[in-house]
Length: 605
Figure 1 (cartoon, rainbow, N blue to C red):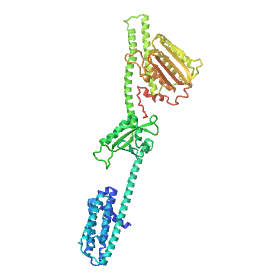
Figure 2: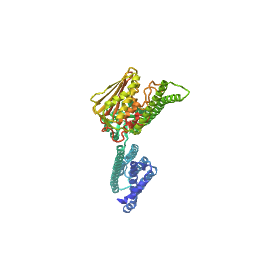
Figure 3: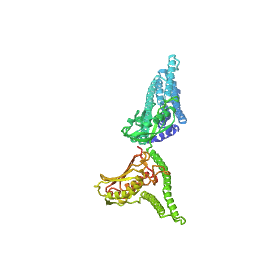
Figure 4: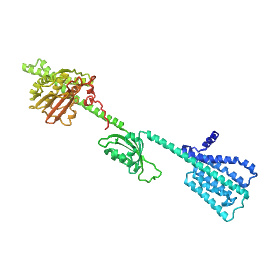
C-alpha cells in the first residue's frame, strides 16, 4: 500500500508539535485525525455519485452530507491547538447532534438513526479520558431522553420519507453504524497495539540502561526498606539483586556506617532534599568478620509519585550507589603522602639536630686541642700532650664513624652498596669483634659474654658486613647498658637461617618508640640533651645489611629490662638473595627510612 504513504505523511504533518514529543500521544492524534479527515473527504467525494443514482436529494440528505464537514473542522482544530480531549468532546457533540436531528425527521426514538447514539460513548472511549467519556455519555443520554419525550408527546414532525425509503435508510443506518463501530474497534485495537509496543520499547530501553549501568539504582520505601534494585548490584556487590530487597542492603552496610546511611535516607524522605553519603558495604556472601568491604557513594532524592501530595510527611526515595573505592584509595594515598612528607620534614630536622651534635662536638675537640698544641706560647708536659693527642684521635675516629655511617646509608639508599658473599666460619669473626670492643666495654664497666656452639657450621655471606652488623649491635648495647650490666652475644643455626643475637641488660626501649627503632637518624631519646651519643644510624645499617643478605632483624625490648636484637640471614645467601639489584629490598621499604620519605600505597580492606 505504497500509494497511501503520502497520505500518512500528510497526516503526520497535521499532528500538533507538542504531541510529537511523545510517541503514544502522537499515535492518538493520528488515530483521531486520519479517519475523520479521510472518511469525510471520501463521503463528500461520493455525493455526486449518490445524486446520480438517487436523483434530487431531500433537505435531510443534504444536511447529512453537509455534516461531513464537521469532522474535518474538528480535525483541523486538533491540528492547530493540540487539545485532544476538547476535540473528542466536540466530535461527540457533533455526532450526537447529527443523530438527534436525523431521528427527529425519521421517527424519533424508534428511528433507525437512534442506534447511532450508542456509538457516541464508544467513540469517546478512544480518548482514554473519563471526563470525555462522561460528557459523551451525557450527550447521548440527553439526546435519547429528548427523543423519547417528543415521541411520547407526539410532537415530532411527520417522517420525511416513505415506508420503502424508511426501510432502506434503516438498513443503511444499521449497516453504517456497524461499520463505524468496527472502525472504532479497529482504532482501539491499533492504539492498544501501538501502546503495547511503545511500552515494550520503553521498557527495553530502560532495561538496557539498567543492565549496562555500573551504578546501582535502588528504590526505598517509607521505612528505608529496599523495594527495587537494578541488575548492576550483582556486579558491584557480588549477590543477586533479590537478596538486597527489604533490609538486605542495610544488613550489608558496615556497622559503623549504618547511622549515616539511615540518616541520609530519612532526611531525603522527610525534607524532600537530595542527600549524599559515603559508607562501606560488604561484598560477596561472607559474614561481617571475613567479608571484603568496599566504599560506595549514595546520592538519594525523594521519588515523585502521582499519589504523593505536598503535605506528605514522608516520601519514597530513589538512590544511586557508585563504587568509590579507588577514589578512597587515592585519598588515603594522598593522606599517606602528606604524613610521609611531614615525617620527612621531621626526619630532616632530627637529622640536622643530631648531626649538629655529632659533627660539631668532635670537630670542636679536634680544632681546639690541635690549636692548643700548635700554640708555642703554651708549654705542656709529655703526659698532657699525649692526653690531648688521644682526645684528638678519639674525636677523629668518632667523626669518621659518623661520616662512614652516613655514606653507608647513602649507598644502601641509591643501590650502590654491594656485598661479596664468601664461605667462612662465623665463630672466629664473632670472637674477633667482641675482642675488638672489649676495651670499650671494660671502660664502660660492662661485661661481654659469648655463647657460640662448637658445631657452628660454615656460612656463605659477606664477612665484612657480618662483622659490621655485630660491631654496631654490640656498640649500641655498650652505649645503653649502665655500669655493672652484661651483654650476651650468641649464634646458632635456625633451620636454613643463621641467627646472631645480641642481648643486653640496659635501659631498654619504650613501647611507643619500638616500631620506629631502625629508622634512619631516629633515636628513642631527645636529640639535644640526650644522655648517649650517636647518630641513630646503627640499627638502620644493620637492617640494610641484613636485607642485602635476604635476612631480617627482630627487636624485643622492655623499658628498664634491656633489649634483645636478633639478626637472621640465610646460611647460604648466594642462593637466597636477589640475582639482580639486591638493594631494591631496601628501597622497597623506603617508608621505614624517614629521610627518604617514600610514598606508600595501601589497599582498602
